Image: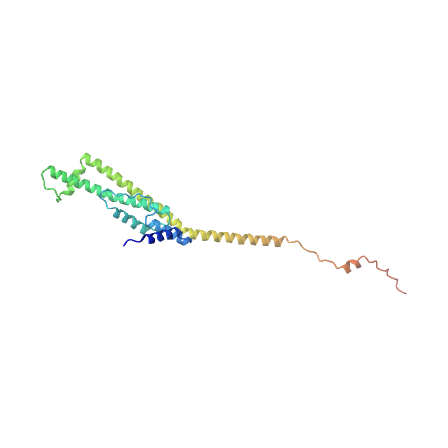
Length: 225
């Protein structure tokens, strides 16, 4: 059942009023959801014509679930890992297709039934001995090596980033503890210095005692004999 024009207009009006998540926690959750569902993907997963794009994104989703990227930088590394992993799988498929094709060609050329035989392993070795097959095989191996290097390099960088992110709260707590300790030490030094350099206050004399010091005293009379 199609929604009415009035309902569609109301939905558009409500969408314009929406400002999205407002709290820091809500924004972080929305960002992670965008990463996980591909809204922020860098678009490096492209399928060949015989491949199902759903299988490629299934591989990507499995890597996202396993490594749980928390920001766009980590997500890009997971994307590169997915690309490298898929290309390694393709290299396996390419090499298998090459050998199967060569053995079928040999069977057809020699008027033999086309299909698997107990001597297929030997047939693979014979096929690899041909110059044109060996050159293609080397290209496939180079393709595989490049994909493997990209996968493992991205994995190493991702592990380094995530380890640093997990350790950051601990490092911040240690920095704060050190700063607090330094502040307490500085305050203690200020108190000690102010106490040591405090001037001594001499006792004050009273007005009466100071006045009596300046009043002349009568001479002492001689004693009677």
